[in-house]
Amino acid sequence: MNACVIHGARNIAIETRPTPSPMAGQLLLSFAYGGICGSDLHYYEHGQVGDSILRGPMVLGHEFSAVVSGVGEGVADFAPGDKVAVTPALPCQTCDYCQRGLSNLCTDMSFMGSAARFPHCDGGFASDLVVEARQCIKLPEDTDMRHVAMAEPYAVALHAVSMAGDLRGATVLVTGAGVIGQMCATAARAAGAARILMSDIAPAALKRAKALGIDELFDAADPAAMAGLTDTPRCDAVFEASGAAPALSMAISVSKPRGTVVQVGFLPPKAPVDFAKLLTREIKLVGTYRFIDEFAEAVRQIVAEEVDLRPMISADMSLDDPDAAFDRALDKTDALKVMVHF
Image (cartoon, rainbow, N blue to C red; front, side, top):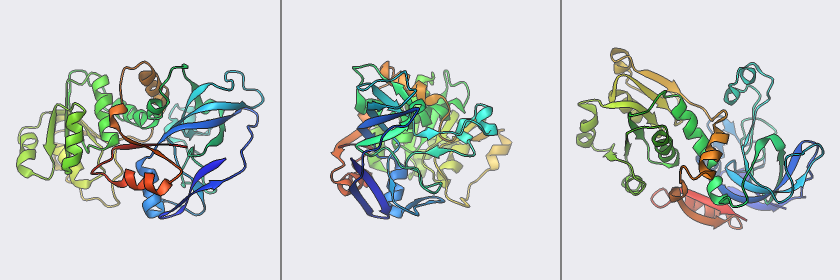
């Protein structure tokens, strides 16, 4: 089998490895489509994501769809040929947070394509791979496998939206017009938000957001443009998806009294943020991390065609040339979501 393996910054290759065999409770899968995520790009550019540093070779990828090609002992609900969506999260199921239904906060989480633990957890960018059957959701035969490969990042957005409370009729701002920002906007709309605003400092990102149907766009690099939001705060909820400290300060300043700011993007260490209005307006600031049972809901919405995330796909590329695929994904003037296949 072939696997997309990262060894360090700008050191990525397709390697031939023995095809694995499923053990009890496991499935052997044949890769269909995968999306290159921001964390994949961090490993590619820097050899690390925050404190998760590559200490050995690792198969990348945690957003993907697949087809069952083999079934391990004791697995009764799947058969070869079944299309599946695959969650990359494998919580321990025994720690206090798992027992409380907060599996995203699991203290012993295995997450595919992550260097957070060592040995690293290989990801899904392999022509053949083995996963636990409990990671898979069986799909209808006519499922668009490229579309359902976007379930994982959409699950992140659904969890973020759940942290904001009731959004029916709300005016929502999303800071950051990247994939997660666009998906937060989509999830907020699905949750009943009446008006979706979006800000970014990149003209290309704002142009894409306009094409995807955002109600109002704001150039975050233009103080005069942003004054339309900050002079008279009108946002019931803000999803800060850029991971930039100035964006969080702005998110607080545009929130109505008793509004909610959900921090979605990873902030840099010791990020300088203006929290003054957090107190005087009684604004709620909450973090959001990965997802719990929202992965199944993301798959359901995609399969039911309640949402269409495909306009966010910028390119389909073969993993036969991984550098080309990852360099394309790095070009934010051109790419939003790059999908890969073997």
